Image (cartoon, rainbow, N blue to C red; front, side):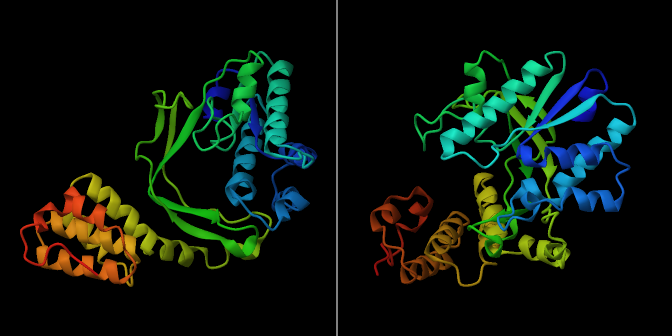
Amino acid sequence: MVATVAAREPVVLALEIPPTEARAIQGFLGSDGSAARRRELVAGTWWQERYQDGRRSVAMADLLETVRALRAAGKPIDVVTIDDDGNATDAESREEAMAGHVIAARRARPEAALIVYAGNLHTSRHEMSFQPGFRWMAMRVLDAGIPLVSLNARWADGTAWICRGSDLSACGVSFIGGRGTEAGIRFAPSPDASYDGWFGVGSVTASPPAGIPAMAEGLDAKIAAAWSSPEAAHAKARRAYADKDYARCAELLAQIASPDAGIAYDHACCLALAGRKDDALARLREAMDAGFKDLAHLEADPDLVSLHDDPRWPIRK
């Protein structure tokens, strides 16, 4: 996107990185991009922090290298950092700080296209149902009278480096279910008015921390394991269910060894819809043995209606 826009007008690329890294980034952008200069780029404390999200990834360093090469080729691209500098006392303060940096970048370069890469909560135009009254960065930018277009991300099935805890030990490669398969930009306001459309990138691949090379060891094996994980099978099964391919749904869920109660129940539903009554009833029994207790839901579930004429129905613990 940045390269396309920079072919016709100046671009300011705003990244969700703290200002403490601005000097190192500018130094790298003005360098020859050698391996030594890249090591200098990611040597800062921010890149070395224990909590490693995608902002500190090899992919982010690659993005900066792409920008460096485009600048070297004469493209008018500047990079600014917009995250909080670490002094925010709460979430509201951080959003206010980020908005302030975006507003300053817009006012400093009114003639340039301003492209902001940030998390999709920060870029929401509207409050979220799970946090009513909270004002995100984009909402604050709009309050300042600066118009914007906010695009949410979409991707096909893939893998991502995800943190599910507070430090590096809880981070790693995970399967991530797709939110769409088409690449490119589509303008279509979201139902909740939070976004003006979406930006599809196709399939995604996990990118490890750039500042901790040891975390990249065995990456290919970790990615392969994520693709064959129970999470991957469940996500694909949900898509098959949505497509009414119930046989495929049942096949995918059968690949999950020792499923929990919820997955066993989902499997029973797909089996019933695929016409496999005996297997569905057996799987329902397994779901109940694993802790499924919502009998009212079970008996009212339209996915299981084909089992109602069986003498073994209704299933009881």
